[in-house]
Image (cartoon, rainbow, N blue to C red; front, side, top):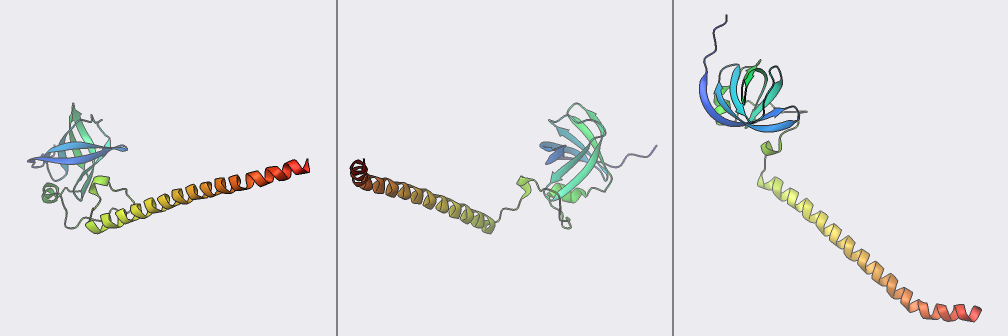
Length: 158
C-alpha cells in the first residue's frame, strides 16, 4: 500500500463547480494531490468537480464521500501556497472556459465604460420614446385640423 501524502490542515473558503452549478465549500485539509472538503452539496464518489479559489483552479475526482464531507484526488499537483493566498503567480489564462462572475476583474475603468454604455442606451431609449410621442401628437393635430374641411367636402359630393 502507498503511504499517505502529508496533509496540511487548513480552513479556506472556495467555490466548487459540480455539474453546471456552483456551490460554496470549505477546504479542511490539503496535500500535494488531494483535498478534504465540506460542502452543503452531497457528492457522489467518482464524479469530477472543479474547485476555484482566486485564480487557482483545481480539477479533481471525488475519492470518497460521507455526508457533507468528501475527499478529492487531483491528477495535477496542488500548489498549497497559491491555494492559501488565493492567487497564483503563474496562473494560466482560462481560454475557452467560462469564468465565474465573482472572479471577473472589476477595474474602475471597466465599470466606467460599462456605465457609459448603459447611459447611452438609456438616452437613446428616452429620445425614441419622446420622438414617438411627438409624432403621435402631430398626427392627432393634423387629423383634427383636416377633419372639418374633409367632412364638408364629403357632404358636398354626396
